[in-house]
Amino acid sequence: METDEMVSEMEELPKTIVHRVVKDKLNECSPDTDITVNKDSLLAFIESARIFIHYLSATANDICKESKRQTINADEVLKEIEEIDFPEFVGPLKASLDGQELAFYVFIFEKLILRTGRR
Image 1: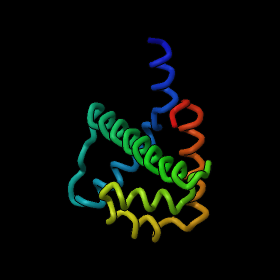
Image 2: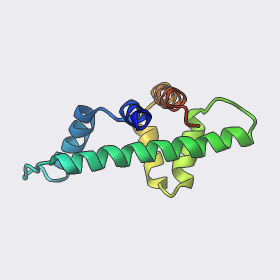
Image 3: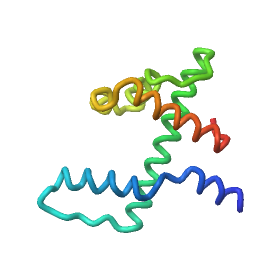
C-alpha cells in the first residue's frame, strides 16, 4: 500500500500549475464570468492529465520500439497525438512550441516515466 502511495505522489502533477492552466482557459472561454474550480474538479483535471500523459508516452514508446530506438522524439509525440484522435491539437502545439521547447517537454515526460518505472 505504501508503494502505491509513493508512486502516486511521484506521478502527481503540481496542483497550482494545473489550477492556473484550468483557470486561465476558463477565463479565456468565459471572460465575463468568474468560474470557480472546486477541489474535486481540480483533482479530476489532474488525474485526467496524468492518464493522458501516460497514454501518450506509452503509445510514443511503442513507435520507438517498432523503430528499434530508445529515445522518444518530438515527431513521435506529435504523430501519436494525431493517431490517438486528437489531430486538432497538432497545429496549435506546433505553433505554440518550437522544436526545442517540445523536445524539453518530451525529455521531462521520459524522465517521469523512467523514474516511476513505467514504460
